[in-house]
Image (tube, rainbow, N blue to C red; front, top):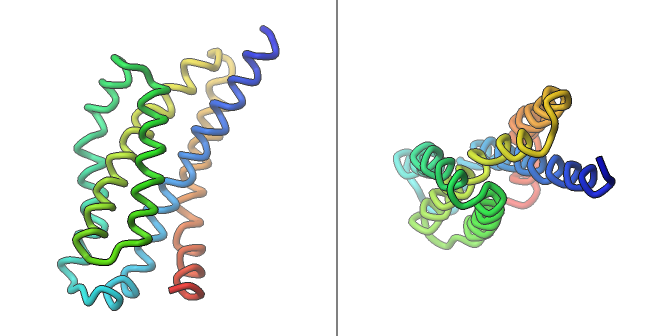
Length: 163
């Protein structure tokens, strides 16, 4: 094994773990901000429900199709596009000026999230040998649950201080 393979593995682990942390973090932090979002956009409970539901629906609907597309067109490509889509749609969520734009950008976030969900673990399994996969999966899963745990706390702090 040469140094380039080790570096590629570390990069793959870092990038997939970053995605495994950030996506659940964003998903769980928005729940704390819903009352503020409701006041900002004068949204009722039904529309506020769509802020979270649009993300979850889009992520669930597109998870299997993007997993199949990754098998056909390449995991790295689907993961990269998903990360870009997720990032851009997160920015759109921040600058939303209407409930429709916010809900639409959250749905787009779900699509980008499903592209990374469906490929992240597959990428790790393809670049790490069987003897290291348990450790790598443990790191990845720890990142997911760290993101889920940190989301409400940091989301609450951000909402409190920045609105």
